[in-house]
View 1: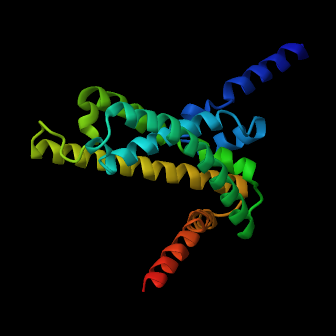
View 2: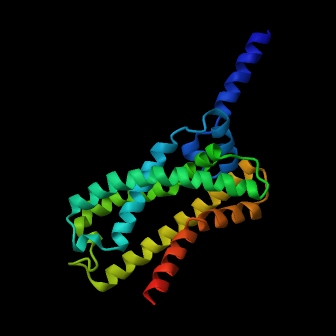
View 3: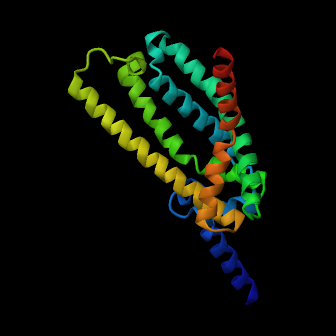
Length: 219
């Protein structure tokens, strides 16, 4: 009689295992704990590449690269350079959040932080999918500064809609990342926020010093 009971228990455990692609959106703490307990590198590089591609396309839009580059060049740039930068960012951000989190009394490490950074980037994948119909409809024009053939009211509506979607994606990503740090570092949400702020501020310090030095030398 004990064999069926064990079988039922195993079935219940299997059913209760979260699907990270879905559960990360609403149960990030439980999901990230399951991920790092089973395989901390589960799909993280795949997600990092997709996130990097989205960031590259978003930057191409902001910089109006379509004014000077053909669509093919923009897409190749996003796929190759964006994907590569996504992996580099994953490594750097994971290391920084692990190190800074330990400064604030956290218990996690860079390996677990890479999982947190990657899986909290799921909103970027949704936004990347949104680029598919945009590119099919507008093509190179989407990456230009004028969007030729489209009136000003339509441009304003598209811009407002894009801004709202971007804000929602940013807030949701922040929610996922903060929740993941709280779970893995085993500290408060305020320490998680401080870890993120300090961690992402560190890389800007050398850049600011270089800018200050260049301005000083010019003066």
